[in-house]
Structures are given as C-alpha cells and as structure tokens.
Length: 443
Image (cartoon, rainbow, N blue to C red; front, side):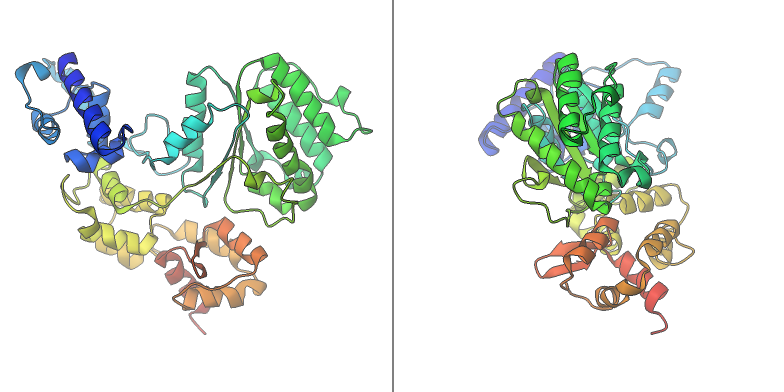
C-alpha cells in the first residue's frame, strides 16, 4: 500500500473510532469483525507490509466507506527468489514454519493472541511511577508471553529491566527468608549490571528486610538512576514457605508505598506473576495482593481460537463467518475450554496432519492422546489420599462445589479448577474425562 493509501486508511479508522468507540483506537482484534479481515491482515496493513492481496484491500476500504483507488496501492515487482522468501515469512501460510507449542512466544510470533484490553492496560500501567502489576493465570496460560512483551515495551521507553524467576531457586534456599533476601538483592544487582555485593552491608541488627531495602535503594536504584521494570516470575513458589513469604511479600508492598514520597523508589516498576491467590494469613495492610493493577488472563474466546487456526493454516471458517457457529471451534472449546496451551496443542497437531479432528476428540483423554504427558503430570500432582473425596465431587458431579481455602489454592494452582459463582468447578471436560478414568473407573 502507498503512503497515500495508508494515510486515507488511518484517517478513516480514526474517524470510525471517534464516532463508534468514544475516540478509543481499535486494536487489530476489535477492528477485525468490523471490516471483515483477520487481525493478522490488519497488523500487516498498519505496518505497511507488502504481500496483501487486492481483494483484502478492497474489503477493508469498502468496510470503511472508502473507494480503493489506483494510487492507494502499488504492484510489487519481485523476482522468483524474492517471492519465495516472502512466502516463507508470511503470516500464516505454512504450519511447517510454526514451532511446537512450548514456552513463551517470541515477540514476532504470529501465534501470540492479544487479549484486549489487557495488553493496553499493562503497557499503560508501567509508565506510572512506583506501579505494581499483578498477572494471575493458571500454568501455560500466557503469563510469560505477556511479560516478555511488557519488558520489550519498557526497553523501548528506555527503562532498565530485570527478571527474577523464582522457579530457579531451590526449595532449601526458599525455606530461609534471610538467605532469600540476600540472594534476591545480589541477583537484582547482577541483572541490572550494578557492581555491588549485599553481604558486606547486611546488618543482622536491623534485620534482613531493612538491609534488603537499603541495598536496593542505595546501591541499585541510585546507581541505575532511571526507571527500572522488575519482573518477579512465579511468586507463588513463596507460598509454599510461609515464613519466607511473610517476610518477603510485605517488603514488596512497602516499596510500593515508599514510591508515594521517595524519588528513588518512584523509579521502580514491579510486575509479579502467579497462578493462584495466596492463602497466607497476611495482614491486609501488609499484603501486596490488594495493591496495584490486577490482571487475570482469560481463556481464549471462540474468535481467538478461529484466528489461531488461520495462523496455523487451517480452514475452519471464512473471515466473515460466525466463529461461534463453527462446529470444530465449538467442539474444541467444549473439550479443552479456552485453555491457550491445550488449544495450541490441538491446532498444531491438526495443522500438521498428525491426526484427524475425530481422532483428537476420541483419544484426547487416553494414553494414545496428544495430552498424555500433560495429564500424567497433573495426576502426579493431585493424586493424594486427602484429595480423593473433593476430587470425586468435582469429577463425578456436573456443578460447582465449595472447597476449603487451602485445597482450592492447591488445585487452582495446577489449573485443574476455576472459580464460579457457586464455588469451584473442573476447568475443562478433558480433565474430567481423564480423572474419571484414572481415579474412579473402578468405583
């Protein structure tokens, strides 16, 4: 598209947003159903990338009450080699170019499905001095992928960034609060390139919390002297060590409160991720779980599932079809809910012709299914005598049930259950089918 065509398109989109969306710019996902092309096509248009066919341009312009003129676009003369190279880079043409679903999605991955308005809220919040962002979601829901994008956004704004992953800490270390705070302080200094060691200034008389606070303020924030985005991944690991959690978590809140009047603490922007709320009996005035911006990552919608099939090269519906009436989308969501990783796994295998859709439905919860490893890991986590009775009620029943706070905390942390108005219920039919067979088939 030419610069003139792009300018006309931007002006028409802004005018539509002013009239229909209270002046709030549309995300690609919000604009897609309004103009009848996929979010990935919209993102390519906005980036002025080549390789968009004339029919799609005509659809976009027509939906915005514009007439596509010859000077709005240009044909690109390319050699056969250039065409082949662009085909390989296109989004999304071949499932063979898309990797197996595992780990956070790279920044340029077409597989990342934005969950508006969460990304916009997160990006906006980290511009605020002394902010805290709390990202909560079950395992494999996309917390790390969102965090990766927040870190990139911060770096683009000139922030220093650091990630401290509590999954990398041994249980032995986590059981000692003083050692954890020294490790945390030393690790943060290393991540930010600050040549400072907390050990010499660690004062047992004033205590480890104040020692850590003074080190972070005087040795780290003062040295860096610019905004710092600190991400703490898997904060829930501390919940397994109550003494350490009760020493560490209030510290995060105190730093947040210090930012209200201290210029150095205003440099710190804090992002934490976790899978379930803490059951610890923390005083409400010292807890970090009632401050800052809470972001709970939702399941994929039917529209997002359908968009993902297009990225993988499957043809489950046209761009103007009703995704909620799509048979495959309905059946997949009925099986795995909108669980992002479970959805990705299914579509990945289908796109590579490793199994048919009927095979997926019939074998999903069996030892021959694509989820076997995931399900076995889940079973190993929850297969405990004291859990048999509540698991039976969850798996064999159909509705939501009440659970003791400690039990709900443990099961929600695995992703097995999710909250409902009446209590707690099994997260998806896949888990119900598997656990019925694995735990209660002989009862």
